[in-house]
Amino acid sequence: MKQLLLLLCLVFGLALSACTGDNGKEMYETAKFEEVQNNKEHARELYEEILRKYPKSEYARQAEERLRALKEKK
Image (cartoon, rainbow, N blue to C red):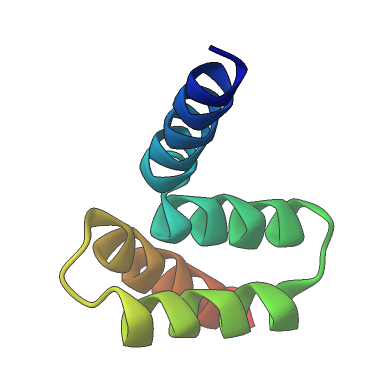
């Protein structure tokens, strides 16, 4: 019984870890935070990384918009 419970906990934990986290979203949110903290260079780097890693995501489109806005502020 103990082994079955342990196995179920392991399977459940693995299933949860596979379903959590959207890396594109997390990276985009971090980049936005960097902008708020006035760390524009790091924000640019993160937006560019989003474009490389997740080019077809909604976050890539948003990252492009933010990069344009940062260039206009120079």
